[in-house]
Amino acid sequence: MFSQQEIDYVLSLINTYRRLGYNYYVCHTITENDNIYDICIYFSKKEIKATSSTTFDLINAIQINIDSSSRNYNSSIHSRDTLVSSDLTKIININSAEFIYTNATVSNSAITLVNPDLRLNAASNYDNTLLLASNLFMCSVIFLYLFFKSILRLRR
Image (cartoon, rainbow, N blue to C red; front, side, top):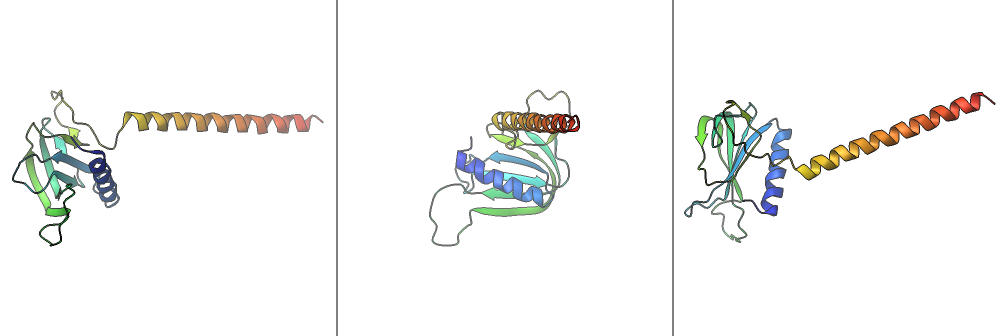
């Protein structure tokens, strides 16, 4: 599972690549002991399709690996995040022990387990809906106030 710092960093990457046209992503943890990196993200400009909860079909995607450890490296052995490959077209199968976050579309209606999207948060969605409703209410009240004020002014 991601820490809050990892979530914040991954969300910033998702937003950055989204501005570059990469609207779809698959992000998962890497828990192998001999691996330097902790997180792997695939970004794609074309729709990513989930054929199962752990299998994804990528077309023209890029892969970025992230080291989220707090180690201090004085040498340039590796950087915090590394672009592993670009123009990647393949089917990836992620181990079921990994935590997977994605906004991929489900290509098979038989899939029962759906991976969460990091960009969606129930609290933030509720707050956005509440904010929209309160703004709409306030605009309606102001409009009605101005409307009745102008009608009452005409009667004088």
